Length: 234
Image 1 (cartoon, one colour):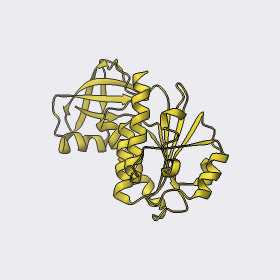
Image 2: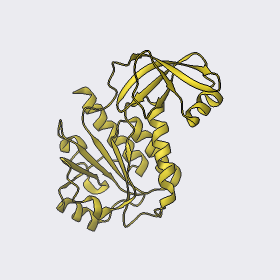
Image 3: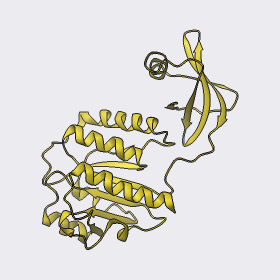
């Protein structure tokens, strides 16, 4: 079933008129005709019957989806810039795992340079991933920030994955039920010791992701999976 986020309020029994981009996708890409779709407006989801109407493409709103597909508390991913295809993979998977916000971060060991023209592409990737996995909300896609810029942002829990933690503190040891959580993941070369010292001085808890050294993209998915699973089970 295809999903589309919409910018106008939906009412059962009324028709929603697809935008130009949505019409193109529905008719040309997905080739929908008299098929059920899921429409989402500001966190409220509805099932609707989509069909052509003259030159337009519309969906008759049928019923509300009673299932809330969002996590019960916020997870924010601060992801250091890594190679393009790997970073975009993280954007997709983080969205599927329920994060509420993604913040690209520049650290001392990043080998990828921040580019302002990537913001639109990142936003589109997150949108498409949210639609594919039937999210009720699109994660906020922040502009690229320097590491120092996130140190004083007020979060209930701030976690940094560090390969030299050597298993003494696991991610769930830092987790707090009902509290928002910022998860910080380093680049391919990891964090420097100086960065970790500064982060812990700003209330970040350094945690281990196991005995093996994970690639940056694997570390992000692993950490988010553990937290999402914990939240879903509560």
